[in-house]
Every structure is written in C-alpha cells, then in structure tokens.
Length: 139
Image (tube, rainbow, N blue to C red; front, side, top):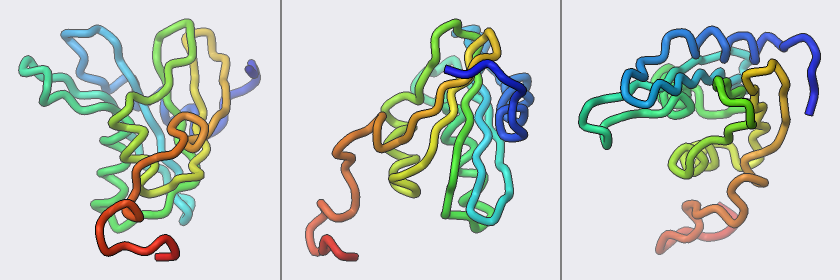
C-alpha cells in the first residue's frame, strides 16, 4: 500500500469517477486504462434501473479503447470511495484478461492510498480462447 502523489493514470481514474451515474448504489467508480501506444481511455460506472443493464467503469474504458482500435493494454487504475481497496468484479476481470492477461492493476481507495496488483493475480487460471474447440495453445 502506498500513499504518495497520484500518477497521471490514477488522477484520470479519479476524474472519471466524477462522471459516474450511480443513483442506485451510490457507489461511483472511475477507471483509466493505459494502452501500449500510451493513450489513456477512461470510463465510469453507468447504472440502470434494470440492474442487469448496468455497466462497470472498467468495461467502459476497455470498450472505448477497443472501439478506437486499441487492443494492447499496459495498466488500469480503478478509483472508488471505499476505504478498502476495491478490485474489479468478475466480469471485468474476464474482459481485462481477454486483452491483457498480464495487465497491471492500480487500486485507489478513499484515503488516496494505492495498491498495485495484476489481472493474473486477481483471476488465476483465467478462461481464454485456448480452451475453445479448434484453438491451439500456441496461438
């Protein structure tokens, strides 16, 4: 756990958190995804009264990046107002792992502290395309 000046990526996640639409959970989340090209794509959680249609901040950031042609990711920062470090949900872990199984994950809590982990640590033995029929391990 670190408590030092926030990186550009962490600041972008905090800024994205301010855009969250979370009237039901009142739990705003912001994410900032750094691509291999150095660009940063942000996302916030967007809730819906039909709860299953809600989308998490992490997936918004990934989908924005992919829609702009970016598919290689280096690091994601995730900001919440929780005192504890709040990792991505299972669905977000799977989506992140699809594109970057070694992705670095920076978690930010409400006290401005950070903790660094990885998708591989958060989702060991992830399901990927190699498990699909006809796919070889070396592809």
